[in-house]
Length: 220
Image (tube, rainbow, N blue to C red; front, side, top):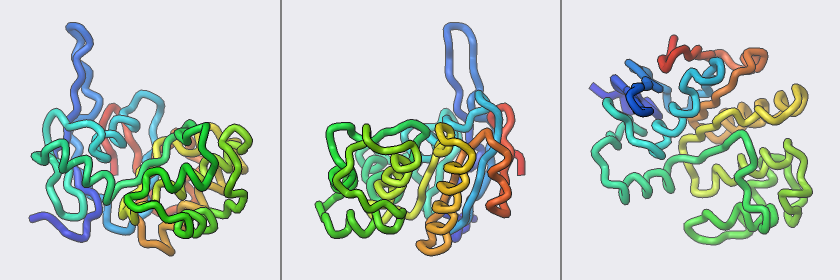
């Protein structure tokens, strides 16, 4: 029986790649439930499957086997069109490097993915993440500022789930602490289900749910 309180549920999940004759099990035997509104940090070394976990959980890639349930809905057999709609409505992404469009300023980067352009809402989101230089372009932003704008963009369509793949990877320790605290505050205030991957175990002190990942499997 599926628990509708789970924001993201992975059932017997596998992702297998073929490289010539070599078979790579990027994800294997994952059975894990991320509760709705929870804050989760997935820790593991490079190459353990963290990025694949984000892509499959976020419906950017289909699993080889298994099911991905989001807010109680099974997405596995959805058409690509339906999956794209689900991503638009439910899932926001934050990545390690800047995925902001360099020719657009902060406000324009926020309004671009909106289903209905709303400058006032864009400003409100930027204020929530502590960024006020609305017309600043990405090449003039610090790494920390880029991530603040990226976090605001991840919330534009009232997403219920935020998936962040190494969002502090390019930041020094102080900046990483600030960004992680910002995400934790948004989790508490907005009720977002947040899943963050990292290879920096020092960041684990900010939450009460650290999940280790090894060889494509989550270890509770």
